[in-house]
Image 1 (cartoon, rainbow, N blue to C red):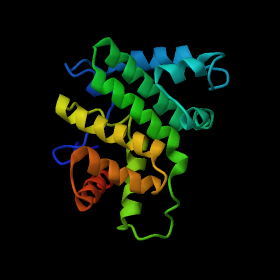
Image 2 (cartoon, rainbow, N blue to C red):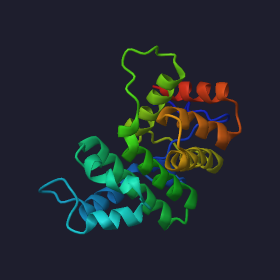
Image 3 (cartoon, rainbow, N blue to C red):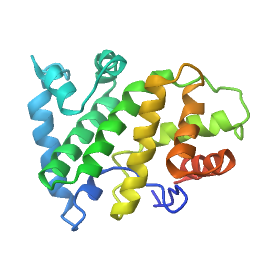
Length: 208
């Protein structure tokens, strides 16, 4: 994937290489992922080990409605892998006292768990803002493990700010679709207009 994720300056997606900002080899991060899987996942069932769900919930600061979505998410191999990767990213970030990346990992988990809240967009115009937002959210979730480009601290902060705001809006807002709240989170955190937020989401959607 290209690193053309722009939130005004640059749209940043949390992934493993960001955690190793000094350029540590990918193999180092794979070790974190391996250990996280050993700690939480029962190899026989592919689900949480006894007591591991509560430990994961506590580690990733999962609260309220999100905790109820965890079991369902674990049934999807793709979501399960992403959830474990994000836990590994937080573990590595915490070891480096990198609070920005650790917070971004928590917010990313919230996005993955709430995937079922997305609107059905089949048959809608691909340039409809809600379709653009929907597909941008899916890109964040689906490509989290593949986006291994290193970004600077301000870029990581931009990503974290958007997803933290998104999580807050979804948790507290009484109106607005999931997709609308995503656009609003870009507006709020980046201080941009709605049109600019749509443009940013479109760049994310179209990245390859």
